[in-house]
Image 1 (cartoon, rainbow, N blue to C red):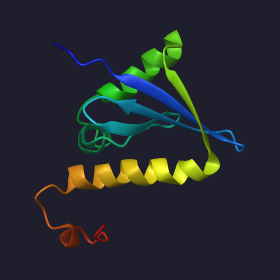
Image 2 (image 1 turned 60 degrees about the vertical axis):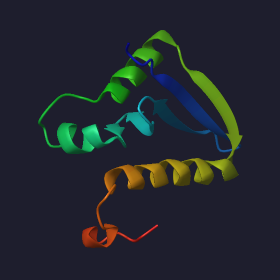
Image 3 (image 1 turned 180 degrees about the vertical axis):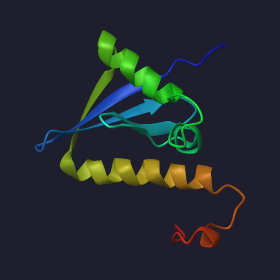
Image 4 (image 1 turned 90 degrees about the horizontal axis):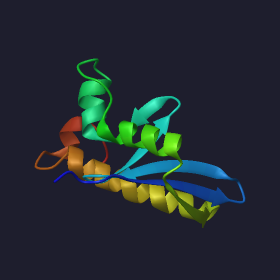
Length: 108
C-alpha cells in the first residue's frame, strides 16, 4: 500500500515566514520557488538531471493546488528549532555508515 504524504505549511510569527515540509519516508523541507527538496533523491537525481522531481515536490504541488495541507503556527524562535531538527535528520540519512570527516563537513 502506498504511503500518503503529509504536507505542512509552518508559519512563524510575527515575521510570517513560511516553511513547507513534506512527511513521507522522513520529513523534508520543500520549496516550489525555486523547486527544491532536502531529500536524497532530489540531490542525487533531480539536481543532476538524471530524473524528474521527487515525490515530495509532487506532493507539495498537489497539496497547494487542492488546498489540502496543514497549517502549523509557531513563534519565530521555533523556526531555528524546526530547521535544526530536520537538518540533523538529513545529515544522519546522508552519512549513515560513512565517516562524516571525509566529506569535510563538521561532525554534529
